[in-house]
Image 1 (tube, rainbow, N blue to C red):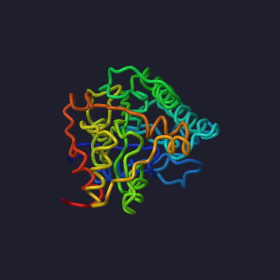
Image 2 (image 1 turned 135 degrees about the horizontal axis):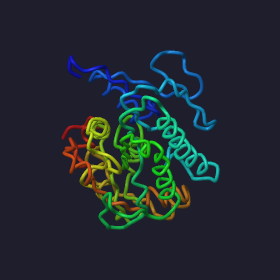
Image 3 (image 1 turned 60 degrees about the horizontal axis):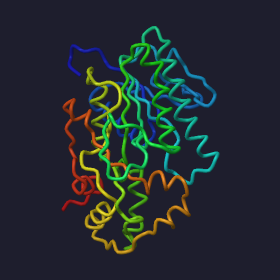
Length: 308
């Protein structure tokens, strides 16, 4: 921020999560003021806004005059077996929470210039070797349907003229949370291996690039709509396995049968771990975004602190 600019106030929902924590730090480091949407009762500080998506309540006044809003909140998509209750929570937290926020922003006297929301590459479903970009049709299954409804829920903000960016994120690589720490234990024990046949594609992105992409989406006034937030080099599961083993200097000789994963985690595994999504970040690259970690091995070495 230059000396002639007014301070920017940017609200984040889900600020305590993996991406929210990293983004909060990055925004603060560049001089922006971060306002956190907090569930339940806010402490009364000027940088907190209370909301309760389940109850449909939100402090409208606290959102007046913001520069931007980043929406990250929602139940984890791959945190465990999809029971009926879990699926209902995933849908309501993502869809209802987004609709509540979008409707509130649309009704403000001084709305933000931009809403940047997290979405997911689960939109594309299980697509084998097909190369997918933002023009590709949606897939089938619970996750694809949730993502579709989740993105549609932002329509009130878009209709009100708020520039809206929906970043469809792949698997975020970070040692502080997400999928990667769950992978590390078996590999460190020497029992890591490919999952199923190992031919399913995984679209991944380093946490550093996630943060940079959200900043880019806030700042780039010509970017709106869907943008895939994935590194430009998706990999098959067997490649992920070999690369992670090499970075950790551990063997990768014990494959995990597809049936075992499916039996343990059910529908969640079939639509995430075992699904294949070869997604490319066409829109971001067209808008001049350059990935700091476009290749898997350097990304893993960076986030795990294991230089070659």
